[in-house]
Amino acid sequence: MAELKKPVQAFVIDTGGDVHRMISPVLASLPMEVAKHHAVVEKATAGGESQVLKDEYGTPIGGVDCARRPVNFALFAYAATVDTYHKVSLRTKVLDVIGRKWSINGEGSQAKKDRITDFFRNAFGKRTFAQGMGCVWTDYEALGNGYLEVVPDKKGEPVELVHVPATEMWIRLDELGYVQQKNGKYAHFRDFAIDLKKYSDLTLNDPLKDELTHPVIHWSQYSPWSSFYGLPPIMPAWNAITVRALIAEFNLNFFANNAIPDYAVIVEGEASEATVEVLKEYFRSHLKGKNHKTLIMDTPDGQKIRFEKLTSDNTKEGSFRLLRQDCRDEILHAHQMQPNKIGIHTAGSLGDGRGQSQERVYKETVVDPGREAITDRLNKIIQIGFGEPALSFEFEPYDIDDEEQSTRMYEAEYRSGVITANEWRQDVYPDREPLEGGDEPMRQPSMSDLAGFEDAFGSLQNSIEKAVAK
Image 1 (tube, rainbow, N blue to C red):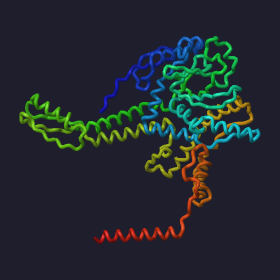
Image 2: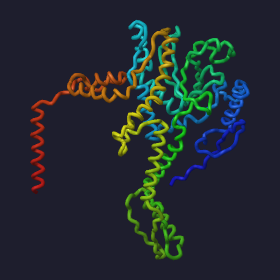
Image 3: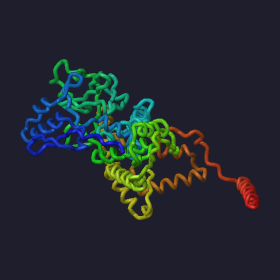
Image 4: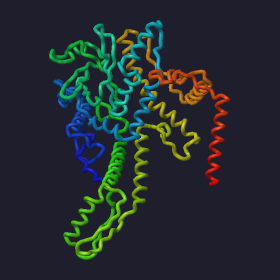
């Protein structure tokens, strides 16, 4: 089995603000400086000296002091690509929050509503609105932070929205803006909807002194570890992802090497150096990379060689299977994800009355809060950027009671030829591209179709009878 790496030192803070060393795989990515930062922030909360302490424990990024990150966000971004259930859960949550129908509503002319609707539909350039905001919300769910750049024209009206990767973003200690760091280059952003008077006290050489600096909207999932950055919901299940990766690595190494696992090589009599070399050469040159190869060996000294199995493959495979399943369940629990939503169907779970209850919890704890956070910020774009406080961005309700009934209705209309596949798709997912050939209504089977089917079935039956007779 792949050897576990030796855990690195992490730190824990007591109520007095002192830092103590500890060993924890969960906190392995936290450096001493970050632990000290949290200690002084806690002291600042009690002593009322937060601003002084923030200034002291910042880190310079692009010429300004930024808050230190509580964890390595690049590591969380990598984790979102290596575990199947983590990745599928992220994608499902993003689609449920972002990928549904939306509209611009409120008191105002239809022309104003159409203008703002066109803006959001085309704001991300080549990406649809669902794809562009989906990138932001994927960062939010995977890293605990999502960033959206609002690009204005010379009049200050929004003309474009840009997803800024959360792995590249730093938050200024003064909380007036953000710094993007990428390949040794830096870009500075103001905080969206902040009082412009707060920038008047900045020094002349501060990048945010430029009024043309683009604003950024920041979504974060609060964590006690940082008053600046959020942490993702997968954090408590981090060990589960690690264990699943180690099991996969063990299995990969086993099939790559094709060596006999957990066996003892026993040589009867005194083993000479020549015998040992024969064994080494066989495993090195003849066995590795060749499946199902029979072991036939002659030793120079005529010794007898036998192999004795030490462990049971069935026991190991069974324990691995259960361990992988336990880790999978822990990952799903961290996401508050129902197994059936990502294609996992367990025995005894159908028709037991729990599905709708779990779906309701998922809606109230994941979908509704996510949508509320998104619409709150997008409405500020409408109110401040476009000067339309009476209009608002709204998602179509996520109705767990009517969703199945609505699906059955669309399917019945499609099968009866009332609507096409693309009309169905446009109603449910307006931001998705039309299907090729989806504009043709479903053709109803004719009597000639049924007659042809009967002929084909009869021919097949005759062929089977002749084969059986022979």
